[in-house]
Length: 296
Image (cartoon, rainbow, N blue to C red; front, side, top):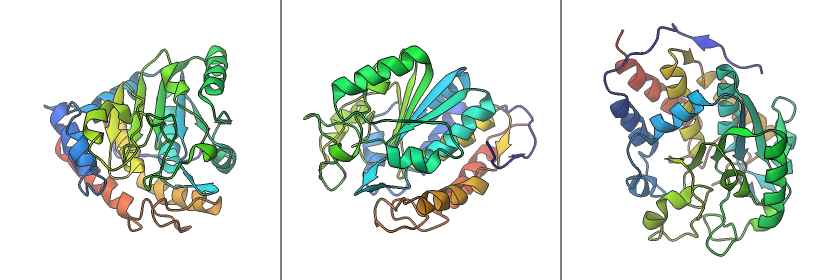
């Protein structure tokens, strides 16, 4: 995989309070709270970003990364860009990543990333496919980022309350049948894994997803949580990766393949309506936190 190189020194990190560092970044990820993720995420046990990073650190073997949220006949930039960063992180750590998604996403990524296309729109079909895939290559870790999750009625919905099940393969089985740790990332409550916050989400005007996971990470934009996971995992390993070098290029590549901003619907290299360069600013702020908390 061609990507930005490791930058800075690789001195092992020693910090007096990893939990505090994790909480600082968790708060940063939900600063805008425009979809209530700061409110709902308060129900999670603090340190979830650190715990998820530790799971990624410990995964030796196949890592399946689920992503892709449909917008009409195409897909949004939020999700796949984060999956691309997580894929590269797994490669840096020596694990074996595969991206799982709908045909539009896997077609867009297949030239540079190993992908597996999902086509089952029923729970039974997905269970059969997941069982076969896991038998062939058992997972060491499964990550879902910005992937539609079924509500209580078995259907998937977008934030406007529209049913999108016909445009998104059923995916819960890939977490439910995984005999390994699972991580989910979401930013609205209708994504796989958000059942961890069912109590808090019951007060939201959405159709919340009911599936659960071992560690849930929330953010104002799901991609941003993925970037944070990459940064903190590399930091724990005593390395600093120039993630910002990849981010804009990844978004531009996705748009060239038909992706759109999930909020505006426009073919722009942006995420959920936020201004261009928002992710780069966030990455800078995370680097600042990690640098301040490092003891040499």
